[in-house]
Amino acid sequence: MNKTYYICKYTPVELLTALGAECTNLNGMPDGFDLADQTVHPNICGFGKALLEAVMKGEVKELVLVNCCDTIRSVYDVLEYSGKLDFLYMMDMLHSDGTCSRECTVVQLKALAQAYGEYKGTSFDEKAFHRAFVAPEKAHGPHISVMGARMGDELFEMVQEDMPYPVENDTCVNNRSVGEAQPPEEADYDVLLAWYAQELLGQIPCMRMMDPTGRKQLYNDPDIKGVIYHTVKFCDFYSFEYAQLKQNLTVPLLKIESDYTIQSSGQLSTRLEAFAESMESDLTQQNGKQRREKKMGKGYFAGIDSGSTSTDVVILDREKQMVTGIILPTGAGAAIGAERALEEALKEAHLEREDIDAMVTTGYGRTAISDGDKSITEITCHARGAHFLDPDVRTVIDIGGQDSKVIRMDASGAVENFVMNDKCAAGTGRFLEMMARTMEMSLDEMSKTGLHYKEDITISSMCTVFAESEVVSLIAQNKATDDIVHGLNKAVATKTVALAKRVGGVERYMMTGGVSKNQGLVKTLEEKLGTTLVISDKAQLCGALGAALYAMDMVEVRRG
Image 1 (cartoon, rainbow, N blue to C red):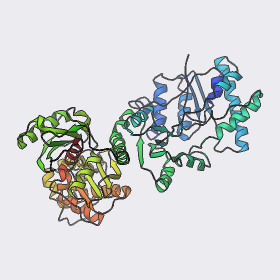
Image 2 (image 1 turned 120 degrees about the vertical axis):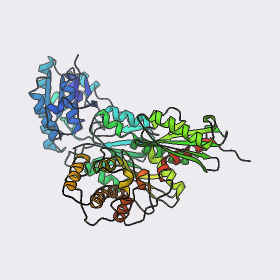
Image 3 (image 1 turned 135 degrees about the horizontal axis):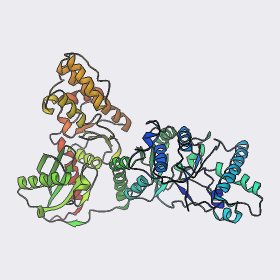
Image 4 (image 1 turned 90 degrees about the vertical axis):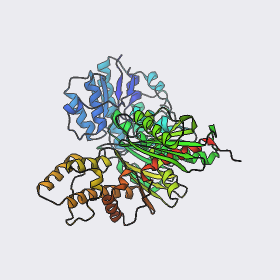
């Protein structure tokens, strides 16, 4: 039997069940939108494309839509003429729960029942209707709430795996409350549908409803320990609510955006893991957990930061003194690069692998390194390393090879908030590397250029491809090299300062990572921030240093 798929919590699932349907929420995330992109505008939201992709692949034969937004209307128009579905229906649910809306909804329910009954060859089964009302399961006790726009099943599973508390899915399609009340007994069809319309429209409102104030009950739950707010690219409905949550929430809040593909889930893993680590730190402090897992051996601890450009290794002794610090190109594979860098660090320190009591890996390639005792995100490790280098630092700026991040810390060095730019090369070390190549300069040469510019050039696009075209055009106009490089530095600095403003960056600022050696960019960034950046001579080793300090935490330290 074909499943009947639906996408909205206002879908009359119980009515469809009473007509013989097996209802399933369509919420998977495809690998890409190859088929969907052939039928709709590229700027339609990712969920709309995911919906089209599932139908075009033949995975869906029966589909009931609700006119949530313009995207769903567009998807319906495409599907109506596709010939891919055995049954397609769209309900016109109104945006309020007043008397007139309930009456109109009853008309819609009857029309759907007639259409589906004729398609299925069934009639309304009142007993099956009553059995279909099942109270939704809710989290009890401390938990993390995922709010905002619907989240794909694969991404939600990732969230569940990463978080230190149980996770409740309170996104638009999942906070369905129909089933908390039972239908009236021995009521005729019209009475049942009138009651049902009231239940459907009386749920916790989604953001498309005219009065969404009832959504406050989602985040006024005293058991919530953190909120992950999810939005879908090109969907505007939930941006307004996030701004309100930022002002009112007293628990940790993380905003993430996906395009509803599997690939976007992978890009979000660092943010989710860092958010979880910050909460685990609080949980550890509350529970009074002590250092654990291993006992002191030779007294050496290693941290490996596997970045997209370089792999950095730090080895500390039991006094937290750096025995050695190694920086090598990552090369083709994270695991191979990490092994090579660790061997070099051990050789320089005159140590063997068995002399290392514990090793923590971090960076984008951290999960590919199997030799470590634990994997921790670069967000948490850079904060720990920065605090160790200068306890007065409260904001860390790291412009990495494949992403940029700004981290705000408290007085103990714990992460309070962070933001990342990890969706494209704009504003990253890779952007600077490609611009240097375009200008036929080495990164070292470029880092010392632009300090004495004369013309204040503005690079209008941060897209790497378009910016490269601008640079080629500027070279053709015989613009001075110093002026062009300053324009590039200004573009990167402007984007970085925007991240700092979003995270609520405060004094004192430290810049970590290899890009901190770029004198021209550092100077421009200081001008934009209106402050002086702390640049340690161990700036590029900061992530590996933090990882090594966490490795030390894993060992039970016995002195005397």
